[in-house]
Image (cartoon, rainbow, N blue to C red; front, side, top):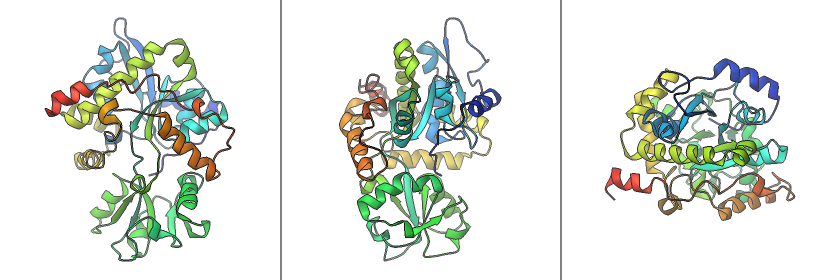
Length: 346
């Protein structure tokens, strides 16, 4: 599923926020001297949010002095709007386009941590001999969402010579793919491929990051106001979230899974287990620079690579201030490396 969010009406977002904020900490509101903050996710509760739920369930946020309220996302939730309206202190941004779009709009928030080192966006085909890489898809019809056309599709045009004539509309309905052996469609690593297998088809899955797509994903976004006025709270939230991700991947994920299933009753143990396995097998959360810098790592070089490629692709104007989209102030400190060693013995 594509989670690109478009900045729009702040008033509408505030109304949604009031309606759906969920207090997930057992017992409700603040306790003692804990500071209450709200974290808005970008979709319904799922394993891809597991580290945050684990930090809540295992008490890492509380140990850091925080009473964290998680606002579960969905089709009507626009995280950049909520941050711009100061309805929430923190939000989840699905990919690099979100903080860059916020910067372009001057909406007053930036990325402070990248939960995913690899963007889980994939292309999916039936088994076929003529498509064995992303490059082989050039010139072939591909089902993509409207949001994708103005996002990583532009990178594919620049990198692999894709053309808009290939675009077919993806409506998040798998029927067109299942009935057409020549179909190619976008998807999310842990979502569409799993559902396709449930229908008896073993798909070919191509993770864009394995073919040069440079984006991070699942950012923690923080308002510029809280970064300036209360950096201690930002650091506490980031550090506890990192510990949550380490515990979720390398320890017992059941405390977080219980909260995930409570908030999203449609989520099943099988779907969660599949997502966890895929995140670990593909190094979505923990790979590359995180092995030495810790989960959540970001670097100037990686951000510049994404920015430069998107400027070349025509997504952003070269005058956009890249550094207004993110800060490295709160990451790359090796947080969680000791916990990982404790849990894995390595």
